[in-house]
Image (cartoon, rainbow, N blue to C red; front, side, top):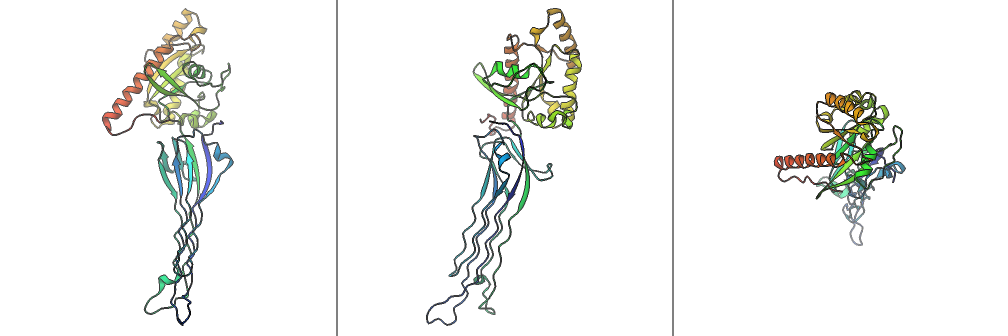
Length: 346
């Protein structure tokens, strides 16, 4: 299944049905009164979060969505039927923006969440509605009101417990493949990963969802390398695992580059709990590895983990560090809101 995290769609709610101009016509009744019925209401457009989707690829091939119009009123005081609603189904973590791309209309996180986006037009009144003591045979009715037309942006942000960040070719996909059943593309060149990948990681009796996003480069927060969209996928993560390639010539600068992009992007990414790890440790001799370790420790102001996804060195330590932080965040959220459901829903 192809991954697509942003689409532009057009929606229109249904028009209201026209009111009817009708009069009672029966044998031996010379002057029957008005009996035109009201028009039906146009259908609404809803956005609903469902659990069996993890991409917006369907909306690349269909961008127009319209609710049904209400039916017109009829004689004998019969009202027209209301139009059927149009329901746009999206995966968890989808945000709905107005045409300007900045005004947030809805944020659908949990399965079952739904939001009214475009309201259908009201049906028109039939002429029976306008009968009065001074006008007992009105010869007019209301037309139905038109529905609303909107252009929307749908943006999906992955819902994961932990996220992998780092420069391109830092070993993120290799790490994800080694700790989960995910099968991301792995190769020895930058930007092998072109879209985010998710994997479920089992640690002891617990499991969590780990997201691998494409590598970040300088200027990512401004869209360089599509970095601004990639960064959005780690907004909902509880903890970040920052991988720094041990074979980098300047590991300190590699670390600081990613940190600058997280801070410049905003939305609290730079405030998230971060676990730093020196990856590809198997590629260096002990003396060189110790030198890189010292440089990274000074730049990060914390003791980094040393790991190699190929040999398995340090992988368990990294996973247990992630699960401890996730469980701590869950406990904090439970204290703040005892009724909140902090479990992840696939």
